[in-house]
Image 1 (cartoon, rainbow, N blue to C red):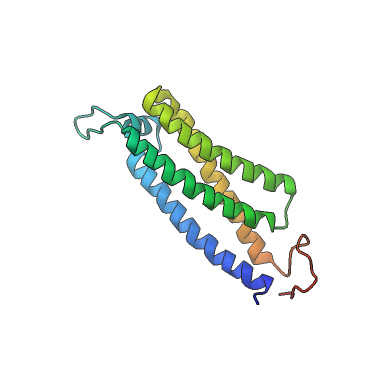
Image 2 (cartoon, rainbow, N blue to C red):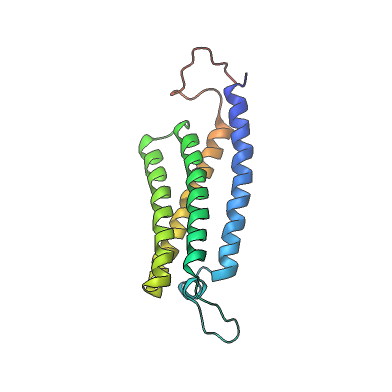
Length: 166
């Protein structure tokens, strides 16, 4: 049977590897859009630039992008939220970070459709929500890593009956 300490050691390894994966995704976004409204507009709505012509994303491409990212990010932030619920911190902070991360997912992937089919001006919304999502990701991971490093025993919310101290 695992002790609470072993679970948190697993969580530490999970958080480090997850951060590497998330950060590589941000590197891809930077490489394809320069994380700028003009680049975002070109990536989703197309660009007639002769140096690097980009075609508008088709509905199938947008459905695939939305499907893959909303599912995977929901699982990612759902897992982080579950870990956050076991952490020793303000319930108000936990709630704010969890709500913000899910709101950012919805806003980000709704706005890429708006960029493609309504106006490139929505690239600002996509950029802002993407930044908010990244900030919430790194804040949650940072807080959880601090929690893991400082962990001396089970959280006060975890019943102590039958639980070994680390």
